[in-house]
Amino acid sequence: MCSSEDEVQKLFNYTYGFLVSKTMFTACELGVFDLLHEAQEPISAVKIASRLGTSVDGIRQLLDACVGLKLLKVDLQSNEGYYSNTDASTEYLVKSSPRTLHHMMMYYSNTIYMCCHFLPQAVREGKHQYENTFGISSREIFDSIYRSEEEILSFIRFMDSIWNICGKDVIQAFDLSAFHTVYDLGGCSGGLAKQFVSTYKDSTVTIMDLPKVVQTAEKHFVTDKEQQIHFLEGDFFDDPIPEADLFILSRIIHDWADEKCIGLLRKIYQSCRSGGGVLIVEVLLNEDRSGPVISQMFSLNLLVMAEGKERTPSEYTKLLTDSGFRDIEVKATGNIYNAILGRK
Image (cartoon, rainbow, N blue to C red; front, side, top):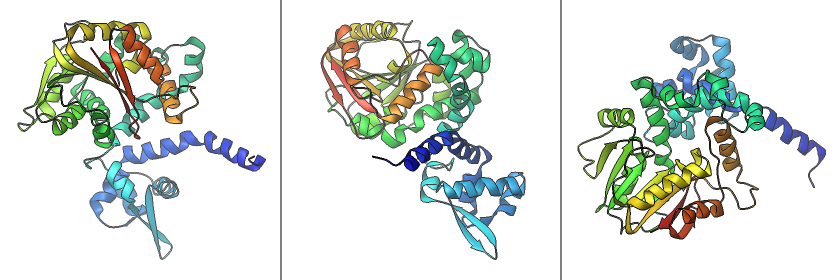
């Protein structure tokens, strides 16, 4: 049994948890990790403050907090601290890194962090809090994300960044080599599609997404080498879905209530060729809902941000079965996101 001191320490850790995340977000936003990466050597708080246009005392306190969080290292010389990135920060928090999560940090800081202020209200009402947070209706949510090309780019980079970390695990959870014509519904710029075609070289993936997303993706993300990846403008809820062997829904189903999910899955079933399937990519809750904590936190995020929730394997199985799919398989990848495959 834990001592009372242990319990109090745990509660203190939870109490200050939001300060931990905001410290990391602030360092990303100010460009601390990028500056230290470019410097290629430890530099002082005074020099960092000068380069970033901040107060010396303020940046020193932020830097020291990042040292405590093991996001930075410090070398003390003549009572002056000289700061540098840790390996983890270089790989995941430097904006130019191929595996950067910088865009995810900024989306969490500027959008999700703001919405979570209204979590009590979301629990009371059982609905998202965009109206309270940003003063917009549910119909305007997507318009708010896609107001400008810069905001579209930011959102796409946020959505795609995670696939550099766990995309391969998701795509290789099942043998998908029999599926040659694939549609990734809501696949943004193709972060997961690139993982697919690099694994299954005889397949082509078409990303169906909203016109603004497709136009931005084709302008900023597509290269001549990616001949196996194509784009189609459309709203998969309202527009016809072309016929294919496999449909990928990554982080789509969790946004919506069961009724809307079943409607979409039945529509996909009609477009799915015989012997084809649908691959759902989501985080999973334990069957008894006891964890994992990250899935529980994501589910609360969906409560304040969308209309859906995270689900258990049996709940996804029921959604797919009620939509006509059979032979449902669920695979835990050991990474953040897991895979559910249903066949026609």
